[in-house]
Image (cartoon, rainbow over all chains, first blue to last red; front, side, top):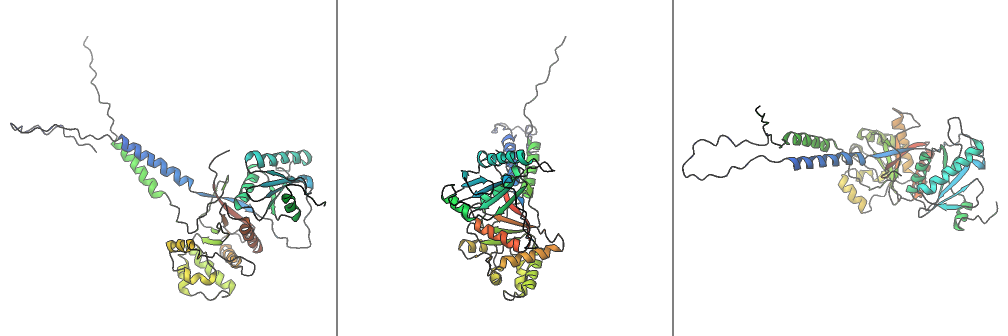
Length: 189
Length: 211
């Protein structure tokens, strides 16, 4: 194949006084070449996998066909509010009354712990639904200074903690004020 | 008893066959690898744990860092249908579009200008569009309430896909930059809502590290 045998066949016609060149083996060691080839194969295999983009599903609530029908109010003890603000700040408070906002971050120790803790509280009070999922309702609010990554991070966290009921809502003015005051709602509701 | 002499064998393994195989595989992977098409608008998507691959035939609405909206229709054959549908539902509200533009529109990878400007953009190729975008000449698809062209595009997309898929479930995806302000994304979601599109996909990239 790649190596040509030259060891035989050069035996005839030994001329006297002829310059005899030293016979060199033409056998080439292909090991480094194989190494290189496999390195490139691994590289191409890995990169083709990594550049694939994936999609997550998002379903928004439908517009009510009849404006007069008010949606049923949600029990405050099921609710967890998450408010994404600028510079990756994340505020949260339970229940529907805007009070005692606390700040956290998007790390598993921050947001995920909070969701799981609230899930446990809701489970203790309301139990689980027929499918065994939490009955917790997460209201996701994004201030105008939040960025798209924050939204995707929260939605991803919903998936991780298997929270099935969540909605993206507008921030209300009370919450904005509370954030400005560092978490304390100044106006009584 | 005479000793059995074991002939000494060379330890040299012929690597030729191995080399052949590995280069064959290498060639295969290089040829089958689908390179990401050059992106006219660079968008770094946020990461998520989602693992569903993006469908082949999909209409992607992107939002760049500055909050401008763009639209990309994957299948060239759908592009013509969508443009025809857009013309029929807007009834030449944005000016007439000639046949030449319609034909060239199938080659346009990214719609990033108001409909009125389409005839000037369809003649450009990807490189020229990338340069235009770098120079700030691509203004994005208008989506404010007074000039809601994005809504019209969405209606056209819905109608075209309604022939093959569920009317309420057109293959639509949102692709946002991780740093893009939420206002643009929210506005886009609102436009979708106005046009009765409630289910769509958010394009993300795979999370690098598992925590």
